[in-house]
Length: 268
Image 1 (tube, rainbow, N blue to C red):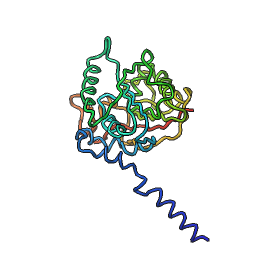
Image 2: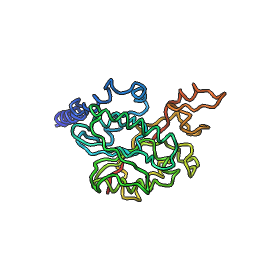
Image 3: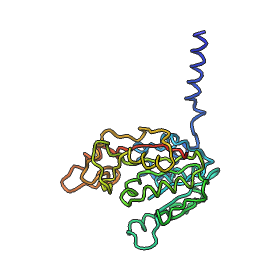
């Protein structure tokens, strides 16, 4: 009886790690030589395969990416979804009085995704909560994702609006995946998050109060070497490396990118 039990357990374990269960399409997109080399270099810190499979992405999903910035994750999401799924890019609103940086980055993003052979037809919308917070038809998305943006919404006082917008667009049981720079729980939180770091507990509290359930937290993007107390915040670290004159750039380069929490929420 024990031999049979052990055999069954071995079969189950083999099924869990079978290569057939890997997302080969996602692996191909990440390994695609058409990805900019400077972006692929960040994979060791951003772990795109592990992160996206943790969130449960599938190629036939409708996925909303919030504030994609320069498009680091769009370079992976769009080719992955283009044949069977759909990507909605909820980018910065650049109408009105906005920093030149926003205008430049969004312009470069639009120019890049014009390559429809590679990216397919991305639906590009402006997202500026609370004034512009509609992400699509209610209940139309399988997944909403955001990467390294929470500090900006904390500073603007709009993170609760973001949570409501994500909740509205998701189907029941849909996933809100959040990756952001982690402030240790024993540190004082700057209300404006000017360092770029926010407490994981604060994010969980807001989202659970807005109709989400924390399904799982992962240390995929953790970096124990990051002390989260740098003079220029997360921007001291790669890839920004905003180092003051006389400071040691190699020190920050050796730390690597910031310590990040990776949280999977489900719409209740």
